[in-house]
Image 1 (tube, rainbow, N blue to C red):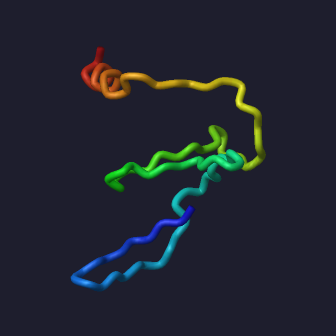
Image 2: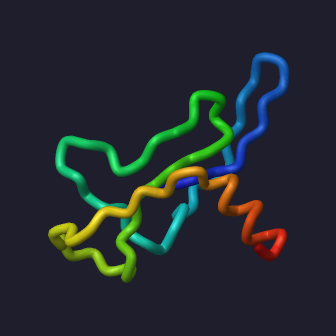
Length: 79
């Protein structure tokens, strides 16, 4: 996955030089995407290999994080 800075003014668009977005490889999920862009375009969610390797591994567990903002507030305040 690549990223580039850009500028847009009036009717013109100019992109900077593309660069590697991350040194980590994205998880290959076959026909499914391992990333998604938020509808407003301000966030990108990706699935990365936990250990940074490129070889495929069968998932042994799945973690669902619910109430993320509540947990973040709890930890930021200190309990």
